[in-house]
Image (tube, rainbow, N blue to C red):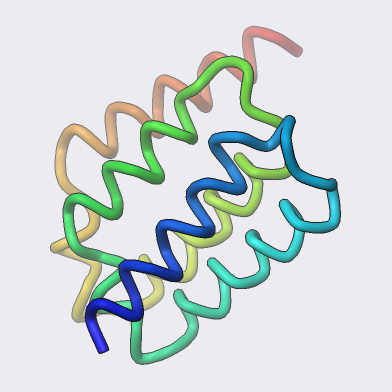
Length: 109
């Protein structure tokens, strides 16, 4: 089961990282798949630190398309709704990254 998750998650990440190579529809479907994972029992695998770090690296990339950043933000929101996983998910580095990104968005406006 875990290998299946890694394979699927890798394909989702590939759509976000190389978004220029894929149709917009494929990137949108990858985002929907990510949110489905976050709303399923696979959320535990998604919350593994290496997977969250992959999402954070995409989230903090300057040239990333906005739709991918929005989907990742929505996924983070879904994870934080799970009280049992909230402490695993919200570590100091992640909070700083989210705050910096929020401030950057405000500055750009």
